[in-house]
Image (cartoon, rainbow, N blue to C red; front, side, top):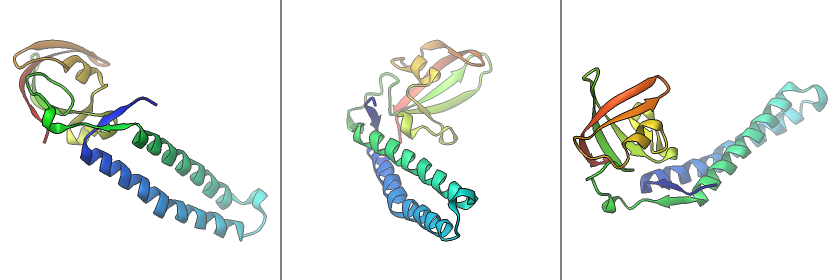
Length: 158
């Protein structure tokens, strides 16, 4: 797996999620398997099959998160330059066509959350904005068409 860059906060959250899955969810599913096994014939036991499937999904998720954790590199927020759009900056944009103003924070893939207006550095919008300065206008191709955006303000992500 490739290196994944994240904030120290994102790294801690990832660590907590792994710990929760291993210490809470894994024993819970093991208990469900044991209870289903106690009900008799496993060949026609839907509860057992469902619990085993849930166990497989959980173990796969734990494995993926551990790999992400191992390959994570913490970004030093004090070294972020706000002269250009880059990861860990919040950029205020003007949609030139609709005159709508909005902002996005550029974050790592693992920290992206559209509800919080945090977009992954690997999205088409973020890729199109990286390296741009305040005042620059950029055309970005997205699935819905082409967006013409003007960078209005760049600041350190909060």
